[in-house]
Length: 190
Image (cartoon, rainbow, N blue to C red; front, side, top):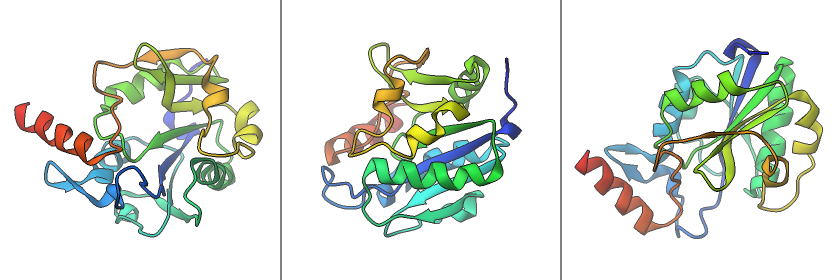
């Protein structure tokens, strides 16, 4: 069974405290724009049923990309995920895609492949080793996603999910200053 994007809600997680980075990384510059704006720009080009961005201290200007904002205080991945899923369910979607604001290299074609592979239950991205976001969850998982604990997010749900393998480097996330420098260098060399 294939789902059109107009039946899929999007949750973009953009509320983390960036402890490993040392400052709020999503506002750092990557190739001339804020790190989080790379994911937001790509995702805003897709006609989701609704677009929710879960934010913490800063809204990063995400409403300008068509996102409704949900603020969370703790910034743990699980609390952010639960807040986003709860907000997304208000539009009564058939599925919810979860994406991360610190993954700037995921191309729109990968999101299309996820939507095409979604079977109504769950599909994750993979680097060839680990299932991870972006991922799409069917309604059977909504309650569990609202109950996850700690900073592991949906990892337990994704462990046995079918996966769509991404091209090398597409699922890179930025967690340290060194990774940001490497990402800027990657862009300069492209």
